[in-house]
Amino acid sequence: MMSIDFEEVLREALTLPTRARAAVAAELLASLDEPVVDDADAVQAAWADELEQRARRARSGEDVGESWPAVRDRVRNALTR
Image 1 (cartoon, rainbow, N blue to C red):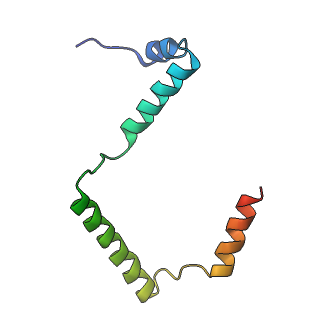
Image 2: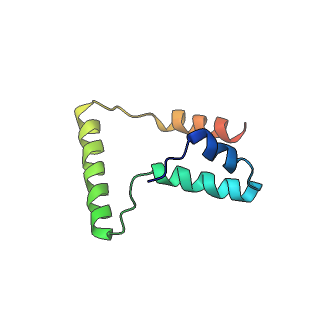
């Protein structure tokens, strides 16, 4: 197997046109993501688990959440920047 130096790859990638560099960057970033789950049942089960965990934390008081006015103000401030 051929060993390619990081600096060499970077140097070559930086010579690419802008669109090609963007495509390379997108592919590299996508490679860091978790694998995509195409199974709708698995996705639904994962969301059900997540919702149950969040509800459990809310009911126990572990996660008290935020008031609607606080959330609304934070969103408004972020949108007006």
